[in-house]
Length: 97
Picture 1 (cartoon, helix red, strand yellow):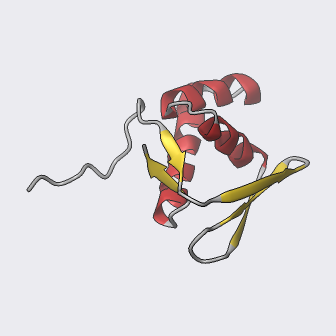
Picture 2 (cartoon, one colour; picture 1 turned 180 degrees about the horizontal axis):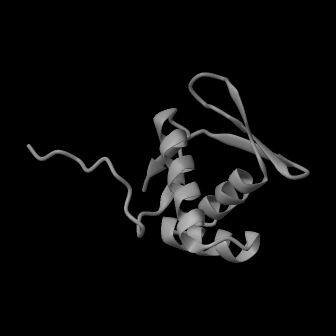
Picture 3 (tube, helix red, strand yellow; picture 1 turned 90 degrees about the horizontal axis):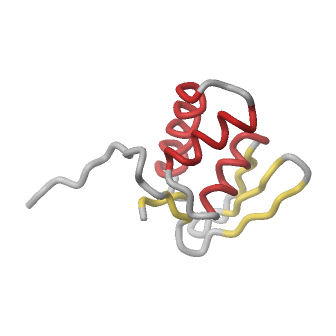
């Protein structure tokens, strides 16, 4: 049996967990966890990452877009993407497609 890799790669395309609901309100986004019924509020940057995930962008593409839109270097943007990826996959809102 092989072990599935646990670290995301830049070319990975994240996907929403089945049944996840969300709505945007101003610069925030609210996500409903399908299994727990808990709501999670995402700030402006996290909301943009979520939108790019819905658009089926790879982690690398999301980082590049954030770098351009928020005028930060790609390393910082990429780190933010990976941090949110790790947080949201740990609680079951995002999955690796």
